[in-house]
Image 1 (spheres, helix red, strand yellow):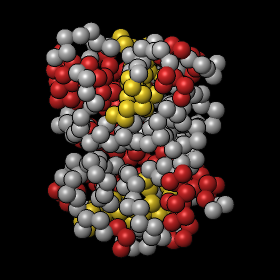
Image 2 (cartoon, helix red, strand yellow):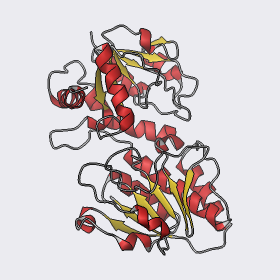
Image 3 (spheres, one colour):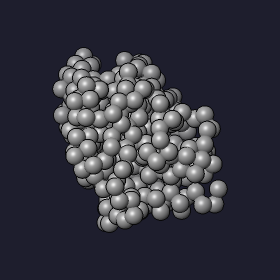
Amino acid sequence: MTHLWVRAEQRQNEERVGLTPEGAKALLDKGIRVTVEESSVRAIPIDGYKAAGCDIAPENSWPDAPRDAIVFGLKELPEDGTPLPHRHIMFGHAFKGQHSGVALLKRFKAGGGTLYDLEYLVAENGRRVAAFGYWAGYAGSAVTLKSWAAQQRGELCGPVGVYAGKDALLADLGAELDALAKDRPTAIVIGALGRVGTGAADLLEAMGCKVTKWDMAETASGGPFPEILAHDLFINCIFARPGTPVFVPHEALNTDRKLTAIGDVACDPDSDYNPVPVYDRATTWDAPALRVADSPVLDVMAIDNLPSMLPVESSEDYAAQLLDTLMKLDDLSEGVWTRAETDFITHSKDL
């Protein structure tokens, strides 16, 4: 019997989950065994999974799961160097030249396990079967706006946290911007036709910002792109990959520009293909903005688990998108799962 083991997230500020109780019930009805770990932080309570008929396991007990179980989580595992013998479904961040990804792949090779990277679960047309993109863009624009607002007060953006829902986020952010008694900033969103860019633009427009929306057509020239520097905010929604243009080069730090805040929602600072190479590390919930220039000022927001600011909405949205693919876990020999395994083999074979 196929056995899906939903682990608790161990990363700070991570309350999302990729399977709802309703989805778990659908898997159980198909004959897939589902074990869900208890969690002290998960936004969706364990009671719903119990009622659905799932087995319940202690928090963070996945290393002791049966060897044939498929372990399902979202964010990264503890970086303790231990071999990984299980099959894991997660965001590995290991296939795009990320330097930290090599260590993860070596752990899988040492343990004999397999990584089914959530970012690489794709349909035949190459489109991802599920993504948190909309809520990443939505929350990323919100924190970038908060960074801009802090600049107007002569400050660096302070800590951010979880919201009960998007209405609470909009109310909080709107009050902060209204208190400035200034015109709303202008913004440019690159990747505006995708899920991430749509979410980013929706938040900005809800806050009354004038938004310029760019996608592949506007960036096909490869740059340079002085138009970006003529906006107050730039939201990057393009994931790093070979051939991605550089949108804000390092020399822009000392250039006369209007741009003072970048929201790098894609957040690939350690990728060889980073299109915003003015910073070198992700930012955090405690310190959301990294100041990379003082004259004129420029802050970068690059939090890599933005949808966790709205964990219930983002979990329910993502889980609904992913469920059809999880329903096919009882046959890993074709389709989405085979393509994901091929990507893993391709990127780990030379280690």
